[in-house]
Length: 321
Picture (cartoon, rainbow, N blue to C red):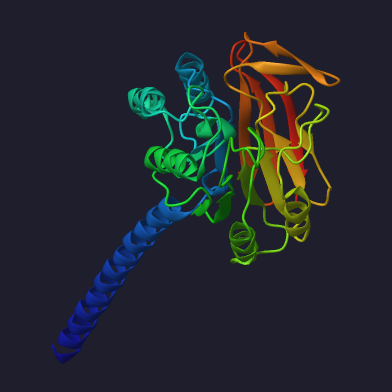
């Protein structure tokens, strides 16, 4: 009888041990499955790490072509990270013209990336009825631009997905001393640029810099930037720099990407109309509308030129920093 009780007790204990073991394994399995699901949600794919943006220059208030470009770009990638409007957003720096561009951006809000960077150009200093600007006129045009862009200065920067976007801008325009179209960058702006280029700098990681006016162009006699030498020297310290410029309207089939200077320069084309250089003269092509689409994956960049009228690619170049 005693042996029977001992045997029964042993069986009960073994049953309890087996039951507890099965229960613990079940809990561990569920926890592991839960962690695996959570992990799969949090893992970043290479696509998640990518950055895409577009650069559009010289809209000149042509909102029909701007609207057409926005729709075409949305069809290419509806989840772009940013759009950069690289100067000459309007043909004259008048509130009425800025309002028309604002209305188009508001109307197309659902098609646009959340981040829109708006830079200043030479035409944003123009009022054809006034003639040359005095100091007060210049400040009024700058204030109009600042209201449109939401920026505090004509030069500004921001970080997008860990990449530095630096916008430069002329601090004067259409004056007797400066002329109508060249950019003037103050010593203060150039010092600021040096500081920004050094900020969180990583070797071989792209730095995106934007300025409406060019450093070089296929149009003979067009200067672009008054402080061209100083600006080039600053940028040359950082081969990671990719400088996007607009202004000339030259077709992307003629001017696009120039590497190893030691930094890279990229011409953006123009939304409003194209230009074909013919020595010291130019041929305006009002049917054209062009811009850039950029993909970034780590140190690898793909820059593509887009014809928004034909909805076709003009060029594609790979840059590895």
